[in-house]
Length: 275
Image (tube, rainbow, N blue to C red; front, side, top):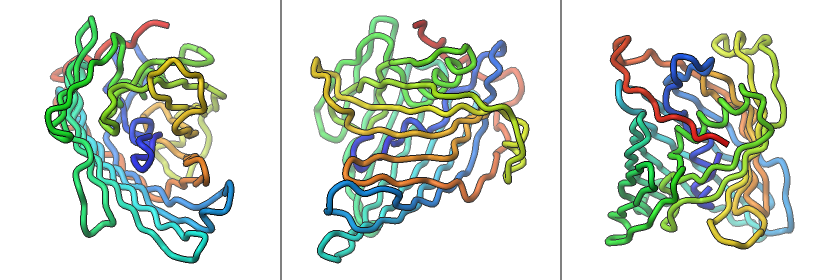
């Protein structure tokens, strides 16, 4: 998960493209709400924080559309409060070839577009064309995944027993093109009773994800997150590490949406890269 506030949360929680018929992964549309609470502080710049994260995910025959909204209310060292809201909307083709994105940020009343554009991918790589910032383009390396396919790759790697994957990712939350990700697959858990009935019969996987700029430097990640993924694409037990403070996200509301595509009409999803 990558918080937009640091150009990092949105991809990891976003649902991936529908899995191929042979895969045990079956992803669903959803409305999910997370309550965010401060769990750790590093330094003294932040003395309190609370927030809310909302998702609306719809699947059509050829694509997924995702609307995500995150609001954080932070109490600073001097006692002042700051409110930041991020709105993020994407459209991702299930074949992995095209992705559109719009990111707005502000205080909830006045919002400004930070990033907007379209990315395309082919077997030899791809390119992002930005409307905001106007006229900017960035090349994408071969194997770059868009957010939904990135999450799908995580879940399929867990099913295959892999300890980690490290694909490049482009999610539209940065003007610098693709990022490097390292996903540690920590544990698998068998199905057990859950307060949300849709999750009670599904196994889940705990993962830890770091996000880096694509440079040669081996620095600390720009952002790090941890969450538990169920095989239908729902996440819970979310942890967001912003550097100087950490927030935990509790899944407080969940509605599973019916598929809008008639059976047999869906476009096949892009194959997961090997490795």
